Length: 327
Image 1: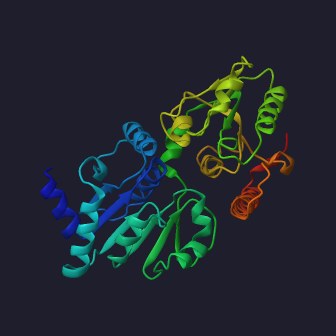
Image 2 (image 1 turned 135 degrees about the vertical axis):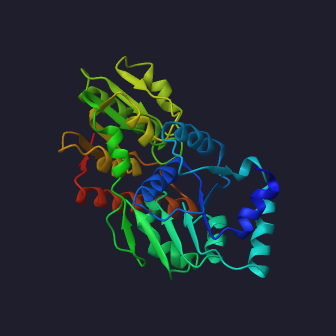
């Protein structure tokens, strides 16, 4: 397909879809599996960071479908070209009949929403829970909008439930192993907790599960966990070739116990892997004594907002049968 052909599709297609990462791709697959009328729908990937783009391309190899032929705009055009196309579309051409967007907050996707008669949003993580707040903040139009979501929630627009029916078929025959999986989070690297507290947290989890294999799926920004690993033979770090959901589903077995710290993957995996409650999911509660002390107003405000989010998401997980634990 030539650059000219792609520009024509962006300008004249009636239905288009934009995603930016692996989770959005998985959710898109699920949406199309619900017999959505996808005829003439054109699929694009926007301008994600390098890590997200690499994981997305790897994930596509695992869950490749003939329904979705993605056009990677970042590999073809400078983003200024897309800005120009948006202006041409706005001033001279009709609106799209439908756009499917993987991130309602992302500025480029918001611009495409303005140029469409209807929109379906896909989950991009826990930001879905704050749709009412952010839609008002960004002045996002709510008319003719729907949200395809795996969260149980009520927001300003109608929702379509994502039960991950397609992904469940990939995990049905997996063996449940008497091991532990930890879904990592860059708490120390993001300067949310102290180095001592994070090391002590991992040490306590390993101590409790000393006779079990522990598989750690690190956040892409995590570095300290690799130093900690040297001290424990039963701690195995799994390279992030895919997003967490794909990493676990693509494995030959699934751990009987899965731990995380206010991560979206606790919500998604609870739905995908919930085989008659044979797998135990735990959300690790962070002790406030381990938090990095913030002195300036801006940093303190940012920390308070993050803690508020963690509390709210922890309450959501509790309501959806994910236990909260302390170490």
